[in-house]
Image (cartoon, rainbow, N blue to C red):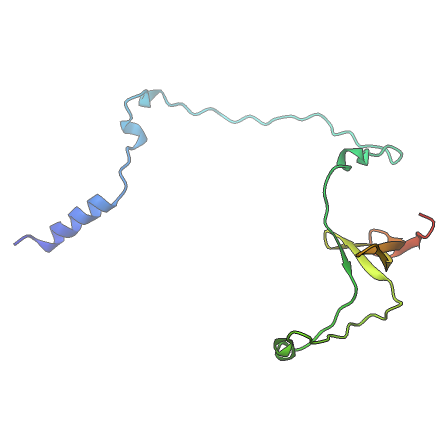
Length: 141
């Protein structure tokens, strides 16, 4: 009968990954050197004046996802789970209120729903600035 502790040691030895310490490597182990790190100096960054702007033309072919939000509603999960085919959910927006136009989830414009042939479309009525405020009437677009 074999010693249980030696059997456990054999299993441990077989289970542990094999590695070779760096000092035992045959290919120039004694030639491994450490170099001192020196600080790197970078030239002073140049800032653009306010009248110089980057051209946005380089982004003209970037695809973004537009979505239109016609309204929202908040309801308890229990009520949501009772919804089925044919259920009607009343939204918080009047039919005459503008809808939100979102780009990548960010509000960029407001508009009104129209129909072109057999498709819904949006007529943009105002463009929103960076903080989501309408920045003017867009009916002349």
